[in-house]
Image (cartoon, rainbow, N blue to C red):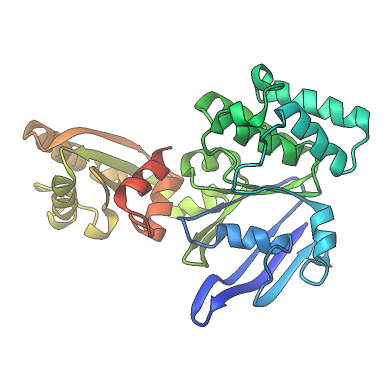
Length: 331
């Protein structure tokens, strides 16, 4: 449904928003784009629908050249942009129905889909409220419904869960899956690594415009699927950095956890590392000793997640400060 081949978007010499990006999205598939702010995710979506033009490379939608024929791409695609929809003076029900009509639905179909989405996303309480009186979360859900009401064969969502409360985020993800099950190809941008792991079939991780990893969540975990993730919350960020150095610096089987210094990543007060099953006992003893010493508030062991792979690939800051990245990872 969507084929992106070696796309480069250069805004000025030597500064590339996208740098040799290739990916494909099939009908019935939910494909995620993960990456920090400035990684090139939104730029890529904008090129698919002709808002921006690639410097090099090809983009095909349903096998046709989207760069040469952006009007075709816009007919074939529906998109929820990153910016909030302009809803002042318009209620969610009116906006969703209007967008369905613009996309080609007849009046009956538009009203039916509006009712279905208002109910599915649990926004009936605000369905007749004008946009200037809505919360950011309800405006975001309305924008999602506007893109989903009469979807194109390719549906693209740019940060669809921003400002949305946890309960309605789950409802939104269910609607994303329903679109794919009905035959749409879905391409979505998100910072929410934890939710993406549950929602997508395949994904690409972008860092500074380049695809640094691509595949299913299981593919990206790879050999780490049989390892455990140690997460330690230190009393402050300085202690967390010291623990990371200690974790990698101690000898295996003695006072430290082992596993190699390169395995330890610090984000704010958190230190995260992967541990082989054979090393779990020594890692547990090490963490317990640090908590007894008052340097650690809490610790846990869990299966290695996509979050761990993401942080390892793009780094603990990824172009953001520690607080922003920490919030993005645990949102």
